[in-house]
Length: 378
Image 1 (tube, helix red, strand yellow):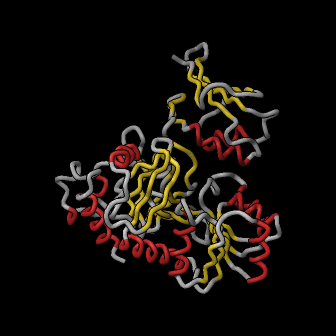
Image 2 (tube, rainbow, N blue to C red):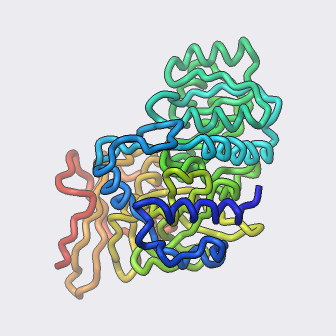
C-alpha cells in the first residue's frame, strides 16, 4: 500500500468536506508528504461536533455507521464509505499479518452493534486469513467453554473482561486487547497474562480514527500502523512537536477515512513519542488526558496520568485529587488527596518517576469534594 498516495487521497477528500473546506483552501494535496503534514491546520472534536449538530443525517455514500458516547453530542456518529471499508480491512490485515496472525482461530468479544470495536477487529482478522467467531460481549463462562471446545487461538476483548474469561477457566494463547487503559497500568498486563495463560498485546484506536497503533510480539510499545495513520505528539500549549521522551498530546491523521476525514485530529490523549524504524512509537501507550494540564514547580503535570499509576497499586483510579497550594516561602506545594485508608509502599516513588514531581503531602479522605484539580495558589 502506498502510504503517501493514500495520505494525499485523504487530503483531497478533506478539501471537499465542509469541516476543512475553508482552512484547506490553499492546500495542494500533491504537495503534502509526511514531512510537510505538520504544516496543515489541526482539527478538534469540537469542530466535528459543531458540524454534526448542523448535519445530523448520514452523508451520501455512507455504507457503515457506528456511534460512540459523546458528552458534547450525546452520540458521536462515525461513517465509512465502501472504499473506506475496503481500505481499512486490508490496512489492518497487513498489521495482523506482520504479527503472524494468519490461519488462526479468533474469538471476538467486543460489541458488534452500536460501537465499532468488534467490527474493526473482525474484518481485518478475517481478511488476514483467520477463522473469526463474532461472539460479542458478555458470557465469560460461555467464552471459556467455547474457547476450549473449538481450540481458539486468539481472544479479542478489553483486558478487564479478559480477566473474567480467565477466572471462568478460559485459556487462550494470545489476547488482542483494547478499549481501556492496559499497558499503562503497572502490573495489569502481567495479571491478565497469568490468569488467561496468554501473551497479551495492546492496541489504541477510537471510533473516529479506527485502530491506529498496536503492539508487536516484543511488547515494546504501541507502534504506529503505517497503513492506518500518521501519528504526532505535540506540546498542548504551543502545538509544536515535542522532543522524544517528553509528554504531549497525541494527534492523528487517519488514512482509513475519506468520507469523514480526520486530518491532524487532536485526540486530547497523553503520550510520549519515539521514532524507531521510521515510525512513531508510544513506549508507554496512552496514559492520560491533556485537557486539565497544570504547571507545578515549573513542570507540566497531567493529573489524569496518575489514574493508571493508582490502579497499578490497587487503588481506585478515580479516587484522587490534586491540590496545589503555596508554601510560606512562595514555592508550589503539591498535595495528593486519596480516597484510601493508607498509602501503598512505593506509590509516591512511582508518581515521581512518571511525572518528575515529588508529592509534598498526602491526605487520606473518605470522600472527595470538588474537581480533579483544586488550585489554591492564586
